[in-house]
Amino acid sequence: MKAVGLSPEQVVVLALLCLNTVQDLRKQEILALPTAAAAAAGFFWVLLRMRQPVPQILSGGIPGLAVMLAAALSEGEIGGGDGLVLLAAGIWLGLPSAMLFLADALLPAAAYALAERIRSRNRNVWKKRIPFLPFLLGGYLLWMLFPGIP
Image 1 (tube, rainbow, N blue to C red):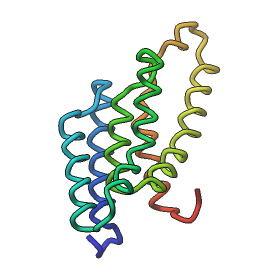
Image 2: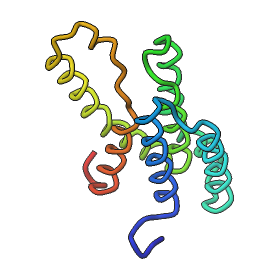
Image 3: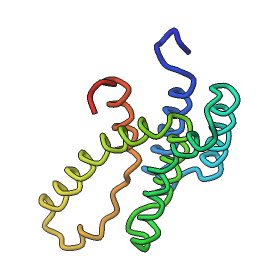
């Protein structure tokens, strides 16, 4: 994996985001069981291979838990699956990385949503669901390509 400059953790998260982005665009859902399995595998990988303490590993899931809480409080307006994918990615990559690529995803997602609302003359556009995982994938790619820029 090092030959192309990606760590095994980055490859797993990239694959997880790509697979779930395709599923989100096609069916407006995520691959819940594989994503949960990836989170568990990430926990053990980081614990045994990278020898990080358990609280530090679990803290990587905080951004995902925050999105899942927002989904629960929004009564379905925000997808909880986005939070599960972010939780798994955060366990693999750690809290700072998860927060940075989430931040890199939020601005383009908000800009896209606003542009859709402005462009559309249909009042029902406010109820249209916008998949967030493509923006998470884009934020992750930005974070990987330009690691020094938050």
